Amino acid sequence: MTVGRGRPRDEDLDARILAVTLSLLAQNGYAGLSMVAVAEDAGTTRQAIYRRWPSKADLATAAIAALAEAEPRRDTADPFADLVAELEAFRVGVSRPDGLSMVGTMLIGSTDAELVAAFRRRVVHPRRARLRAVIWRAMDAGLLDADSDVETAVSTLTGSWYALALAGERPSRDWAQRVARHAWAALGGT
Image (cartoon, rainbow, N blue to C red; front, side):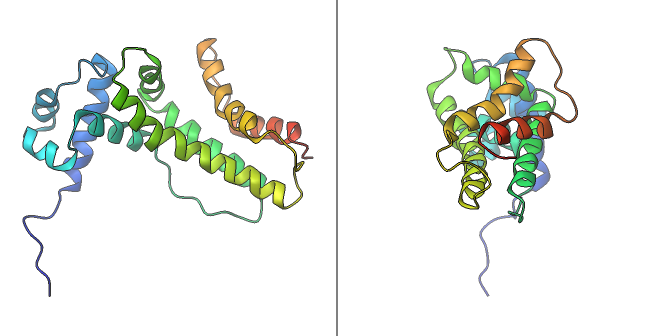
């Protein structure tokens, strides 16, 4: 039997630290995010935070990634339903308190480059890869045109949410279904 070193990781503390980090990011932006303030508000020490996340950028992106995470989804026999499910997971993530403001923080030119790179690596790229995979699967099954512009479709799918938000409009509850149907038709599906 192998004995681990130290105490087991406190998952409640992890969640508390990430929640405090999100709140402070929304209030103060990345430049104003302080590890001291996170530790104080989460009821822990800076050392406990640094053991979990070695840098401020790691902590901030972990908090944002937790905000954007969805339950893992298995592919089904219906790529269209899988596309809707992926868009619904995106909708839930971006609709959470401070979800959209976290995305906006990534677009500010003064946002730390390390944070932006980590956000892209942990949140943006995986989401786009999942959307691409669904579309490619549908293409392979002959459900969409083989010469479809996958990259434009992927950008359009989530971009429509941001366009509505910038226009001050609230996306409808059936946004995921409607956007998937629109993209599906544009890609040659019926």
